[in-house]
Structures are given as structure tokens and as C-alpha cells.
Image (cartoon, rainbow, N blue to C red; front, side, top):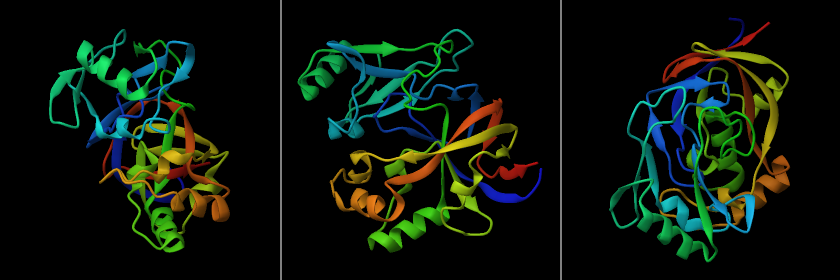
Length: 241
């Protein structure tokens, strides 16, 4: 491993697209990202390629999803949902599906992907990485505290040098993170979902406006998986080559 970039401070997986996710101490990384990430989604029945997201229904973020079994090469782990009113139900619960359909105001199809499906419920392959230094810099730009979960990252890196937005300089480079090797390939263009506070679900359009004027509405980077393995909180990340 070459130049040290820092270490993993947090790992997040989102078993259901646009639902609140789970924080992990370690996670398996498959060729398409964190194993089980976005393995479920709701599709618009009238437009099957369109996923339902919190951009259109912010209340989706009040539903929390967690994997509750191991899964294997042919099927992802079972998923448990905790609803805003505290009910705990399986992903397959028909009342849950009706509830989400009523919230969206459109007919929906709940979809469960398999490990053989390429993109599943993600918008881009494969891991989304943000850094603590960039979060702190954005707080200064915006003038308010910023929860990294606004950006739905898979991996949060505690940077060694503390230089904000240095991750954008990693584009085109390979990085080893624990057992895993990834290639950073593009910045993440942001939408209005970042305006939703993951703590109290309040909406403030000022954050996206700040990103639009200062960072071309981009925050964080996408990385494609080159070598699979396991990542753990505390694992060191370093540039290769």
C-alpha cells in the first residue's frame, strides 16, 4: 500500500433503497458494492425502471431497514423494517407495501434483487465514499452542522491529512481499503435528498444550494470494486501505484 489516506470511521448499508440504513462494524464487499446494499426497492408500476425515492417521498427515510440473516451467493439476507410508529415487520409484509403505496400516491411493485443482478437499487456502481474533512468544510460553507448520513455514504473515511475534497483527486486511482481494492471513478452529483436532515427529517433547501454554488452540487465519490473482501471500521485506506 502506498500513500496513506486515512482510516474507515463508519460503514453504512441501506438494504432498502431510500429507507434509513444500518451502521456496521464490518461488511462484505461484493463486485457490486456492500453485500445486501439496496437489495430491495419499490418500483413504479407504470414505469418499471423508476425507483421510488425519498426525493419524491421524504417520509421514506423514517423507515429503517436492517439485514437479519446471512444470505448466500443466490439470495441476499432477509430484511427487517422498523416503521415510524415503531412496528417491526419483515420486508415481505403486505401491509407495509400498502402503506408505502399510500404514501407515494402511485401503484408500486416491491422488488427483491439477487446477488446476480448488477445494479440492483443503486444509481451508480458501486461504493459511495465521503470524508470527514469534506463534511467539516461543508459545515463551514453552510454555517450549520452537517450529518454525513445526509449523503447516504457506504464508507466514511477519517482523513490522515485533513484536506477537504481531496477525494476528488483520487478519481482514476486505485485505493486499498482493508482487504478490498476499489477504483475511484467519478464525483457524486447530488439531488434534493441531501436537504433532508436524517435526525429530525426537517427539510432545508439551503444545503443543496450551498453545494450547487460551491461544489457544482457534488459531494463524495463513487468507487468501483476491483477486488472483493471485507472492510472493517478502523481499516486503513491507501493509494496504490
